[in-house]
Structure formats: C-alpha cells, structure tokens
Image 1: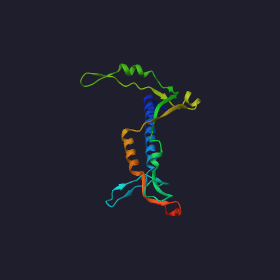
Image 2: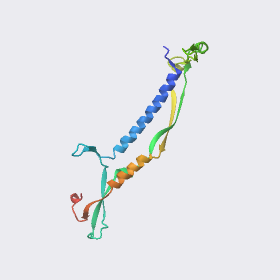
Image 3: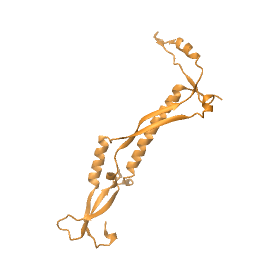
Image 4: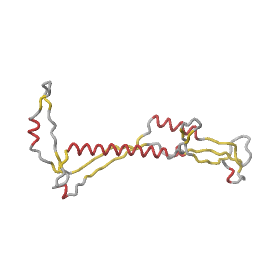
Length: 188
C-alpha cells in the first residue's frame, strides 16, 4: 500500500524534528546546571530560593591569631568546577531516497492560477508527492542518513555574569578555624 505524503510536509517534519532536538539539548543543559544547586527552599515570606551545592576543604589557617596546626574551612561551589560552555546543533545533513508521486498534474496547476477579488493573479501551490511505502523505499528499507554536528558555544554574557555572582557569594571561608587534633565530626 502506498503512503503518499507531500515533499514539503516531509521537509517540514525533518526541520521540526531538528528544532525539537535543539530545544531538548538546551533543556538538558539547564537540568545539568540545576543539578549543581540545592533543592528549592522557601523563606519566612514564602519566597523560593536555592543555593549552590558546595563541598568544604580544610586549609591551613592564614589568620594572624591562628594556633599552630589550626585550619580554616573553605567552601568550594561545584558550579565553579564545571565548564560553562553550552552545546548547540551546528550543522545537520539529511540524505534520504523517496519515490516521486504523480507529476503529470504539475503543469495543469501552474497554468490554472486563480484570480483574486482585486484582479491580481494568485499562483496555485504545486505539490509534489512522495511515496514513502512502496517501490524503491520498501526494497531499500526506507532509510535516511542523518548527520548532526554539535558545537560548543561560549556562555551568553548574562549567564557568565550570573555564574560569577553565584561563585563570589558562595565561596569563601566559614566560621572559626579547626585544629588538626579535633575529632572528625567537629568540623562544620
């Protein structure tokens, strides 16, 4: 059984699929970014917020009043350790083979242009149909060869500024120093 579709609908379907693939790629990057933030919390005014996930590193204290062997806890946001480059579909190549449908009506449609109410001739759309389900396509398995090239892109200026502000406010020393002799669970 033949499965005739217009060539234009086939091309629009391919373009729509590529656009959707780019949208999903962008959302995946947003999900990755959000994985470096803590779960959303609410403050006393019911406003939602999130904070960067961090790990703590005990470093030798540089404070002038620090005791020998005392360490200070430094908060390091995970966000600063990941590359901030995004991805986008750079090029797409689609190769496919189809059987052309009936072309005999193309000349008739072009000659039969209609007149609009203001007397201007409006050309009729000529539609080329393609057979997706018989003949050449069925013998060759209806295959399409699709090649995508994904390229890294620099973050937008707004994204770079936001990440800088988050990093400036999230990293740094917290609390008084700890000593090397202190039990493990006393470091906070």
